[in-house]
Structures are given as structure tokens and as C-alpha cells.
Image (cartoon, rainbow over all chains, first blue to last red; front, side, top):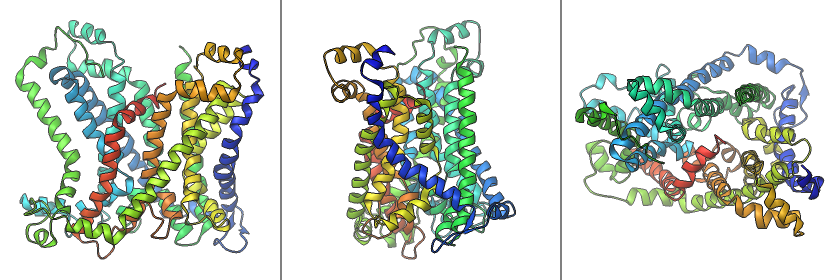
Length: 300
Length: 286
């Protein structure tokens, strides 16, 4: 600490000033404004009218509000849980088998291939899948018909029975590369002797996978689940391009709910209430995650 | 990536058919992952007549780039590419600069209350964008910055640098003190130390941040959708995203649209691949 002081601790504060001023202007002030507006009725012009908690009461009675959070629960399955499980298996196979049997170059080719959907802009992946799943000219239905299975062809995004599941499948495709990259990097930390010892003790591949790999990857699994869960709570681009929340409210999500309230219905107060709820859920989750992480690091 | 050395054992792998069954399964999984890209590329090069006659899964009878060229012209794609480049490039440079300054104060300067500052930056990065969008929209309108690239650049510089600050501060926490002390004894001031010592020595992390800021900003959709409404100012994802479902978007046009949206992303992936994969992992596990 003495060394830091020799430069003058407060001398560093000046470096923080641009960042603080900009964060205040772009994040903190607007956030406070949104929370404030959530207690008003406001169409975006004129003066907001204070209505207390009315917007929140209305949210609690709005089936679309509850539907959007139900959809988020399913999207967490599709964006966080399923990709993590698939990612664990693929990363373990790539690291532990393909890299050994066919060389690490082959393994990294696979890794890059699986990662490719991750780098597409979300809106572009929406355009790609919107076309593939199009009921009239889409490739999936043509493929099913060509395979002699016309009965399986559906209006994937336009039928409320399938729309959300179609979106979920797309999200798995988008997300799976991220855990693969994370877990392969994590596995390279693992001491190969541990595997050898396990093999000498007669452990099967499955035992090694569940008892060693998964156990040692705990920090990565944690990080992947946290970041992808938060991403699922914020999902917007694919929904906007693919379904606009429809048909009806079949694929409505909180961020699109807020967008519609703000810019299509001019119900700025109501949209602000929705945004405020979502913000507090995300910040609350972050606090819980940080706590858990801090507790996990203590023993060391 | 170091391949695990395993001289002995690995018995199941010795059996040829298991080896190849696993390989085949993985290849199928990879092909399924890449299939959408292939199908899009295939159909973007068909003539509408070829498409109408043979459907989306047949190989094109002849390579026809006229559809892509016509769509490119129609949406003035050159303009959209330039807009995206200007926004992403500016945000990457400015965002990195801001991250470095913040992290210098927090990680090396250890200014008072650093934990709280870090939490504010982390929260700024995690916040759903709709929590700030309407006030920003309102403010931008009253400042005549609505529908301008400048507003989008400023907003994303702040949002991206929030993440960069968090990451770089944790790197600077462990910055070797001896080097800083030696420079201070030689009479170097904080600015000189930052530019001559800290930045060069953390160049690896900085280049990762640059690559990420560029690609993340390129991919952004929500705020550019709200802020950039005129045709001349739209970025690539916004332009293609809002066209989806328009009446003139028939099958071959849509796949042309998807293809020209994919291509820049693939180019960046090839350019930044190493940095990205290194970054995905450093960003997460310190």
C-alpha cells in the first residue's frame, strides 16, 4: 500500500472521472428516470401523471406479464441448461478423445465449427431461421416433404403450439458453442495424471467424466450458467425478428413487452414498470451469484 | 491447447469401431450445426426460377449472384456496412480507452470505494437495455442526437467499457508493484506510467477487449433499432432485421439477405478467432 501512496492515491481519481461522468449520464440517471416513470402514467409527451403503484398492480393482473416470465423460464432451459449439458459432453469428448485419437488440431476445428453460430448477430440468426422455418418456402418443411414425412411439416413459428419450442431449439443452436469453448479451456487445466490414476483404478469413461471432469469444471459450469441465464432474461433480437412475441403472446418475453409498451403503445409508464421489475430480478440474481461465488472462494 | 499425454491405457479408444462411431456422431452434430449456413449460401445463389422449380434443398443449377447483387443495391448495403464499421470501430477504440482509464484508477490506483465502483460498472453492464432506453431516447431527441451514429457510439462506449473495466481491473489488481515503484522512483508521473508501462504490459487483455467490443457492438440490435430509424443510418443487423417478413422478401431474397448478414460476421471470426477463443476463457476464469 505504501507504494501506491507514493504516487498519491487520490492522484488516480482523475482517471476515473470520465468513466464516472459518462456512466452517470448513460446508465445511472436514465435508470433512476425509468424507475421514477414507472410510478406514472405517461405517453412520452406532456407531463407524467403520478399514479403510485398502479402500473405494478396492473402488471400483476396482466396475463401477458406472467406469460412472458413463463417463456423466460423455458428460454433459460434452452439457453443455459441444455447447452451446458450438451457442452459438457461434447467438450469432454473433444478434449479427452478426439484430441487424443485424432490430434488437437481436429479438436479445434470441431470447436470452431460449434462456436460459429455464437458470432452471428442475433438479428441475422433470426433472418436465417425465419427463412428455414418459413411455412411456405422454408427449407425444413421441404426437407420433411422430400423425406416422405409431410405430416411432420408445421407452421413452426406461426402456430402457437410450436412457436416457443421452435425458438428454444434455435437458441440451443446459438448457445452451444460457448460452453464448449469454456469447458475445453477448463479441461486443459486438469492434471492428466488424475485421469491416468483413475484409469489404473479401473474407472470407466463415464465415471471419469462425472467424477473428475464435471467436478473440476465446477467454476466454468457456474460462470456459464450465470452468464447464459442473464442472457436469457434479456433476450430480444431473435424474438423481434422471428415472431414479434406472437402468435398472440405465444413467444412474448419481458424485453419485447417493454419495447411494445414504449414504442408501439406509448404506455411509457407501464413499460418502465416492466423494465424495473426485470432490472431488479437481474440485479438480485447477480448479487446472489456473487455471494455464492465469494463463499465458494473463501476456503482457499 | 495442449493435448493430454496418455501413453498407457485408453483401452476403449483402441477399438477401431468405437473411435469411428464417436467421430461420425460428432461430424453429424457439426454438420447439423453448420447446415443453416450451407442452406443459406446454397439458396442465395439460385435464380428465383430455379428455386421455384426445384425447392430449397436442391443444388443450384447454375451459380447466379444477380439476386445478391440486386438485394445489395436495393438496401444500399455498402452504406449499412460503413455505418456498422464506424459504430463498431469507434466503440472498440473509445471503449478500450475508457476501460483502461477506469481500471487504472481502480486496479492500480486502488482509489477509495473501489469495490462499490466495480459493482456499479458490473451492474451497468448487466442491466437490461430497456431499463435505460426510454430516457436515453427522450434525452437524445431533446439534444438533437436522435437518429445519429454519435448517440449510439457514446451509449455503447459506456456499456462495453463497463465490462472492460471489470475485467481489466482484476488484471491490474495483480500488476507487479516493483515495476510501478521503479518507474515512480525514476520520476514518472501517473500518465507516463499508464502509457509507457501499464498499457504495453497488458496489451494481450486489451486486444481481447478490442475484439470483443467490436464484435459485440456489430451484433447489437435493440438500441440501434430504437435509435437509428432512417435508412441512411441503420447498421447491418437493424437493416436486415426489420426487412424480415416484408412483402418483397421472397425465398431467394431472404437467403441473400441472410448470406450478406453472415459474411461480415464470418470474416471477423476468421480475423479474431484466436483472440476470441482466448478471450472467452480469460474473461470468465481469472
